[in-house]
Image (spheres, one colour):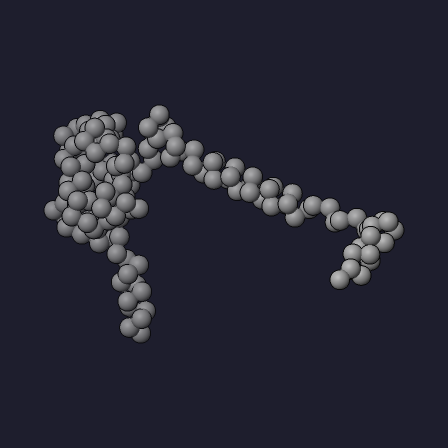
Amino acid sequence: MRRWLFALLVASGPAWALSDPAEQLPDPAQEQRARALGRELRCLVCQNQSIEDSDAELARDLRRIVREQVAAGRSDGQVMAFLHDRYGDFVLLRPPVNAGTALLWATPVLALGAGALLVLGLRRRRAAPAPAALTPAEQARLAELDRMP
């Protein structure tokens, strides 16, 4: 029974991230916008979670900034630009494609290409033809060499 409760407690962790009702905006539409924006922003501490899913102190601060910006009437683009200017591409869960992030976006394609080349190279090496049988002259020469002291 305790394991069940523990699993339920662990699984519900992200739901606690925005546990303080004082953090929420009074207007449900603005709160919905703020949450949607928060799901597009990376927690700079956790690095694999959005700020809405993280309970890190920095994520809490970023959620507060997003909500302040939304409450001030800024558009989604303005809020994202504000945070992008302040924290760079890393704060975005989906960074833009540009010269600075080209390697990031190309890495999956490069990895697949390298894997394909490796597989082809291994198949060619493995598919080398078997050596041909010795000719009668070669067999005679081998027998002669075996008889030598």
